[in-house]
Length: 209
Ligand SMILES: N[C@@H](CCC(=O)N[C@@H](CS)C(=O)NCC(=O)O)C(=O)O
Figure (cartoon, helix red, strand yellow):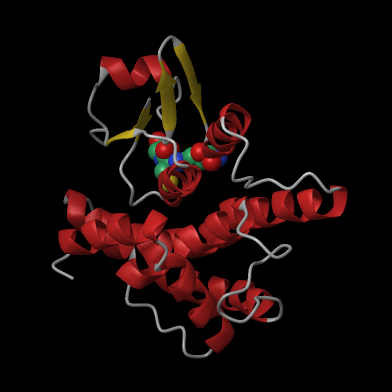
C-alpha cells in the first residue's frame, strides 16, 4: 500500500499516523510539488495529498483513507461505534482539517514551505494567521484533557490524530504555545507517540532541527 504526499502536510501526517497506530504497513511516497508525475496524477486527479494506492484500488483525501484503514483493519478502532463519541470524533477531525489547518496554514506555508521550495512568501498573510489561530487555540485549551487523556472517550481516536497533526507544523514554526499550557502538554504527548515521533523528527531534520 502506498500513501502519496510529503509528511509536512498535516493531512498526510494524519493518514500515516493512523496507519501506524493500526499496524497497517504502508510505503510513504512524497510527491514532487508542482512537477508532472503520472503515477501520482493517476491516484489524485486534483493533485491533492494524501492519496492512497492499494493494488488496483485508489482513493484520495485523508478522511477517506483513514476510513479505508478502519474498514480493512477494525482494531484498534480509531472511530468509535458509540453514537455520541463517533459524532464528536468526526467533529474534531473536521475542526482540525478546516478550522485549525486554515488558521495555521498561511503561517506555515509562508514561513516554512515557501522558503523550502524557493517560492515567494507573504509575511502579511503569515502575521494574519498568527492572529487567526488565537481563538482556535483558546477553544482547544478549554477542552483538551490532561496528558495521558484523549479528546474523545478513554482511548486514542482519529480525533487525537487529526488535531495533533497540525501541531507538528506549529513546532516546525517554533510557535510559542505557552499561553495554552494544556494544549501544549497534550499535543506534545500526542506527537511523542511512536506513530508521529519518527516522522516529525525526520521533518525537523529538514530544517536542521
Ligand atoms: N481534505 C483533504 C485536503 C488535502 C489538501 O488540501 N492537501 C494539500 C496539502 S496540505 C494539497 O494537496 N495542496 C496542494 C494543492 O492544493 O494543489 C484531505 O483531508 O486530504
